[in-house]
Length: 493
Image 1 (tube, rainbow, N blue to C red):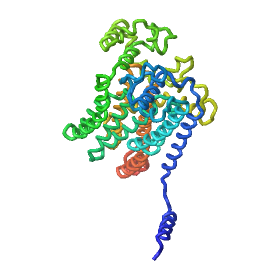
Image 2 (cartoon, one colour):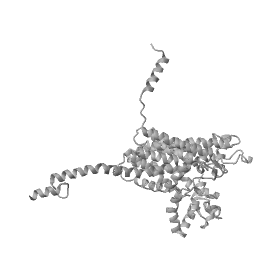
Image 3 (cartoon, helix red, strand yellow):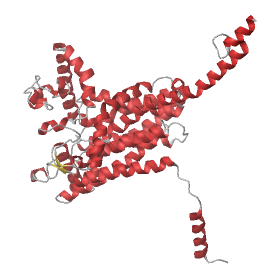
Image 4 (cartoon, rainbow, N blue to C red):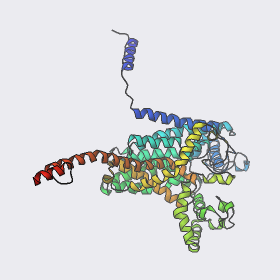
């Protein structure tokens, strides 16, 4: 009898001697993931941000610090203002990104803490690229799925977002995770799947409040897709999963701040969105923060009624201007290449939220190449995305989509329509479209994939039809077909 070690050695040797067949697309996917990680890790390692702790980044740092050292979710400046100790709890910002930041902070916070956070974000962003491919495979053929994944991997907006202490990277990951979980609802009878999808959506909403109300159209969509009789169970389970997790945050807010949430930011966003082209009285120097120059801003944004009253007044005074701004100007600004906020720092936005002193996009060839490709093709992808969002709602048999592909495509289309509606109602800052870039590329590939499918079908069916027509012509001796002149001559003779 062989010794156990010898038996183990023989089994390993036998396994290694087998021929391992790895599909070609897996090799390509691994290469794409390596490219994605290389761009992201080099970006966070070699980028130098000018004053990285400012604005929203400064608030997230305070949230993380207060949570770690005082157990309180608060943006009170307890680092420099000792009168703020203990910090006063608030609910201004969604909590999950602040919780992530708190895991890496020292006392006091250091530059090394920020570096650790950005490196973690590089890994998270790379993993999101893999999830994008898994979503794509439920809609698109492999070549187009790889295409959308590659665009996500090299997108300068998604790469550059990792260098900041901002929620865009984590929100993008949570969002693709939520969509992937939602895509698994179809084709599975396991009741845990809709619950997990609801939990994932709640986690994404707790990372960025933009997604808070998406559970309403998503629940209606799930109930309507299979009909209420067959779909209500999945819709209820999905809603239950969302409410369980988000309910924890709501309960905390009632206990700590005496309300379910804080709509202060929502009012500011809606009021700011009323300024056409984000200009105060059309003065170019006021872009993109017109409220800094409006002496009446505080009064017109003190509550929701004041904001709505200002909106009605603006449409009443200049209806054409406001209508053009809401229907054309805002969507274009939302998906513009240049990030809006950077204009406040006397530099052209490009893909950077806050100004950078140094970045690999200035000198490394792979960064310059991918930036040039994406910049040159940007509006083409946006136009194709609009087509994909519309096409997704056409009858699936007419498109040649499977039931699974149609469901996932419509779920993503619904998300993008919801996002556009929220941004049009508020401020269309292009930074808020960063997390939607993976879905932009997925939906942009849908029209291309369908067009290519039709082209292949036409090529396959055309020879068959030609052959059938020739056989019919020979049998019936019809004029105008191959050999018809000789047949006509024989009949006359």
